[in-house]
Image (tube, rainbow, N blue to C red; front, side, top):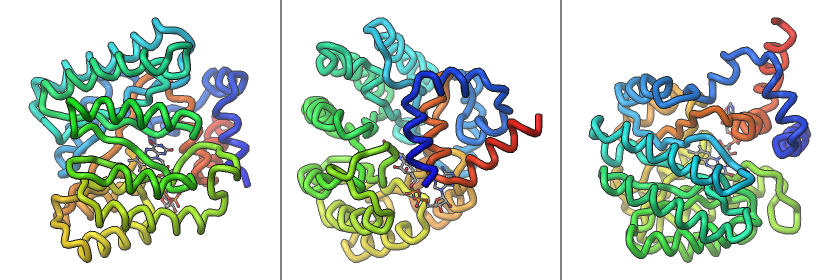
Length: 307
Ligand code: FAD
């Protein structure tokens, strides 16, 4: 029952200030976050590439409060893309963005976020790669999917994330599973009410399988975002039944979670992409990782008292 409490804390400014200022030992945060700058993140990128892993890069930031911050978030991605260009990784290094960091929640935010993300998608395309729009809380989803549809007119390979805990997601999967689409399916990491989402873990898992079947049977490119060994096995089975080759879908996991499994899947010939988050605004992302697994919270608390 700790998860919902931590998720509530992840949206609290007072908690953000307290935790960010706390003497958190770096190893705890570093387990999930690949540094605070491009320079600190780059060796992680090289190490993952050396293990045969692809990446999707997230410059941390969300819930900004004015248009200047949204422009700064856009510029941070543009600097990242500039730094990636000489590495010539192409689609092996793509970007994940949260539209809330591009101003989506501000007045006129839909258009602002669309303008900011378009600049990033254009720059990514110029170095031969793509962008995936992360899914945030359910109130932002209609706007995210509308922006995704607009981006796909010029950049059809732009990806979108869907969350199996939402009742609406099976329908969204059907709408998104068209030729050329790239859809990442995850369980969902936000605190959602029972009016829109399954609250029971087993129901979320069952919905995940239903969504996975729609995506695997569809014409798009499914991106299976989970660390759950049962769902990984089911995805392999559904892909096989749908006649998909190993390069016609991919697995995705978060940096720092089930690393041996990431390497195992890549060694078996699967496309395995690691979601690598870096930057200074790590609080919300870090708290969601704590909420997913009570053992992480215990580890975090122990590190505070053992200083
Ligand atoms: P779970 O049942 O939670 O976990 C299965 C097993 O994985 C656990 O038993 C444990 O061994 C391991 N594990 C899972 N989480 C952790 C953890 N934090 N620490 C240590 N071990 C762990 N959510 C969104 O709402 N929007 C997004 O855009 C989004 N993007 C994502 C991108 C990727 C690539 C991935 C992998 C996840 C993303 N998520 C996103 C998070 C997702 O919604 C889940 O909260 C998260 O993946 C945990 O669910 P699970 O499928 O791994 O299954």
